[in-house]
Image (tube, rainbow, N blue to C red; front, side, top):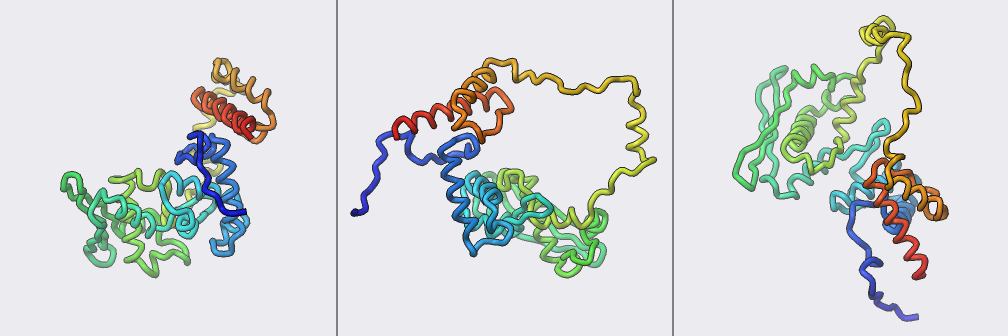
Length: 272
């Protein structure tokens, strides 16, 4: 059979560029197929290989950030259960955005008085923005602790990555969409926060609560009394084959979106 060009007569059947991967049934199923293909590849990092769930999360970020999924997979790491992007990718995303002039760095001081400032000019108004990281900050936060800390072997590069990360979080937070860099996650895990021990202030504060005060349990969810929730429950029960793997919505907006997604799925089945 000769190859034919597929023409979409219905706009709803066309692939849509959206961030609602987890709420749109068709988009979710397509992303799942892509994730399975990527997970079977030997050209992706080990923490994605054979892990469809990790690949799905990386695909979601790539979609939201309008990036090539393969590039994201090569530059995303999982550090103690949290995904993080390489600092060089974060810097590349900032430079690519054209919001600022290319990011530059200025080193000042020596020894314990060392510092690194990341700076750039905002293209919209010519404002020079900057963010500084000092060695005293590194020591105070414990980033250089541990035998595997790169602050002890390549401090100049770590200064650049850290100051760039601070710059992005302060002046262009939309670049990372709430993500942390791999270097930040590594630093956090070099110096984990201590657990509250017995006899500590945490225990004393807990003892302030009167023992006779009952603890509320199984408090009714106000969402379950809304018409949107009741309609979602009815729709979910009517189409269990479609909704059996879906998580329940957490607010009225998600209820409405889930109901619409079921409708689209039913329509597509009828067309088929």
